Length: 76
Image (cartoon, helix red, strand yellow):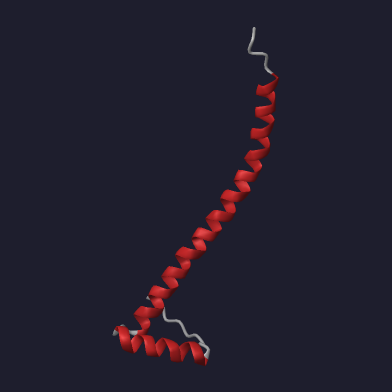
C-alpha cells in the first residue's frame, strides 16, 4: 500500500465524517472505495470517447460503401 497525503475541503471532510459515523467504516476504507469508484467512472468516460472517435471514423467509410452498393444494378 502507498501512503498519500491530501488536503480536503472542510465542508467535504465534515460531511464525510458524518457519513462515516453512520456507516461504521474507516476513513481509509471509505476513501479507497471512493477512488476505486471514480476510477471506474473515468475509465468508462475514456472508453466512451474512444468509441465515439472510432465510430465517427467508420461512419464515413460505411456511408461510402453504402453509396457504392446503391449504384450496383442488381437486375442483371
